[in-house]
Image 1 (cartoon, rainbow, N blue to C red):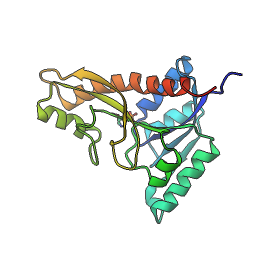
Image 2 (image 1 turned 90 degrees about the horizontal axis):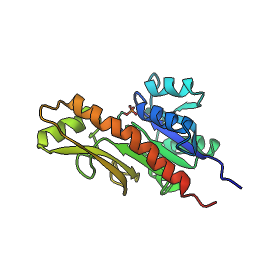
Image 3 (image 1 turned 30 degrees about the vertical axis):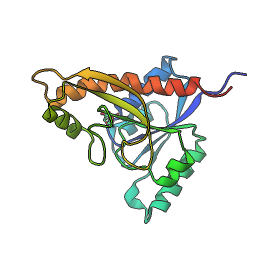
Image 4 (image 1 turned 90 degrees about the vertical axis):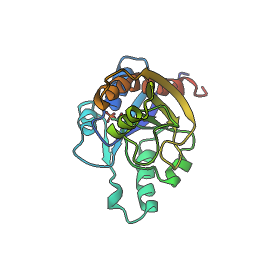
Length: 200
Ligand code: GRF
């Protein structure tokens, strides 16, 4: 009896290009998964438009709307349980995942980060700041990382990385684009591995 597709929740805070890459890979048949729900921490972002265009349910769960982390965790868990999610994918999501959610989905939350962790990660290291720091360091290469998520930013076990060169004259924008292109390949590949390695 073939397994049903791996059910994903994709969390996003921005444009959603990683969500788009995942949806494209699923449509192309290279990832045995489906995006059951997109969770955002704010309204009005590109990821919501991409999800809506793909007919995917969107749940906006804004941390500032909750009186406590426990209330936020309960709201997130309710969304994940209602969608019968197997794997949580943080794709351009900027908020910390509450410990109660990390525990409930232990080993089943992955994040993509636009640098070679453990370098250039942690609180506040996101977007352009990451690439500025890489260039300022004089590093001759950068890349992206997919890792398991724990309650700290960018700290869980690394699952996969892809390296890209830093080119002479690189700006943060040029480096970001080179890294993002690899993110769009690496994240679907890691999700495909999760789908393949499930017990029948
Ligand atoms: C990407 O660099 C991703 O690694 C980081 O957020 C950036 C934008 O992602 N977490 P997206 O275009 O919103 O998917």
